[in-house]
Each structure stands twice: as C-alpha cells, then as structure tokens.
Length: 180
Image (cartoon, rainbow, N blue to C red; front, side):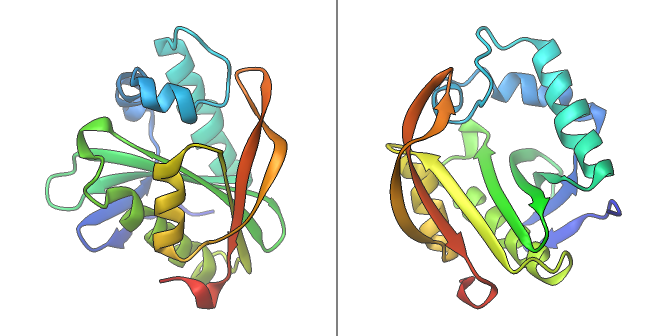
C-alpha cells in the first residue's frame, strides 16, 4: 500500500513513522489504555515495546499489506491525537481497532478518525465489511463504533485474550452503506 496522508476535516490520518515511538510509549502508560487496549501482556510497558509496536506492527505490516496503522493528527497543528488500525488478513474484510491520547478523550477524535479510516478503507482499499470487537465493558469503544454506524451484533463468550485470560467480547460490523 502506498503511504499517503488521509485528510479528514479537522484531522489528518497518516501512516506511522519511527518518530512516533516516544509518543506511543507515553500514551501507553495510560491505565485505561493498558486495561482495555494493549493486546500483549506487557507490564510495565517499556520504550522497547513501543518501538516494537511502531516498527514491527505498524510499519512492517503496512509494507506487507496485512495492516493499515494510522496516526490521527490535528490537521492544523500536527499534534498526535490517536491511532486507528485496520487488520487486513482476509480479502474484502478488515478489522478495526483504535485508541486516543488521554488528553483528547471525549472530544470526538476517535469517532472522526474511525469514520475517516472506514471511508478510506471502503473507497481506497475496496473493503466490503469492517469488523469491530472490544472487551465487554469498554463502553467508550462501543460508543465510538455505534456513532460511526457499526451494528453491535453479539456478545461472544471468552472471545478475546486479554493479558493471558479469555474474556467476553462485543462484536459488530459495518458495511459501506451503513457508514454514518
């Protein structure tokens, strides 16, 4: 996939670079992010973990075409505000994940970034469906998904691994004509 910024109104979405490592490390110290988002059971989260995420999970998987990891920035200032990622392991289907910097929560950044990433995935990547899942109890993630148009379809028992333990998950999906 080519690396181009994606204009999104007040935001710009762009692929990760190695310059994002310190920011990922800083944001990853947030207790809420650690509770709901970090998939690997890493505690404490170190700079080496942030480097691994950026270099191996964001940049390398973009290059291989298996993920599209994007930084959401303030379009006017360039300040990093959040992250949206799309897993692209099945033709025509993506799976979305996202988080925001704790300082911008509650301001619609995640909703705007997810909406823009989904629009880009449908129009540029040709996806036909985007899946979403979150640990039951992650109300903020569910609220963002629903605002963007995802249909929450089920609660699956022990469907995601969180810090080595299987936990229940909400799952949903979005079709191109459902994007709000």
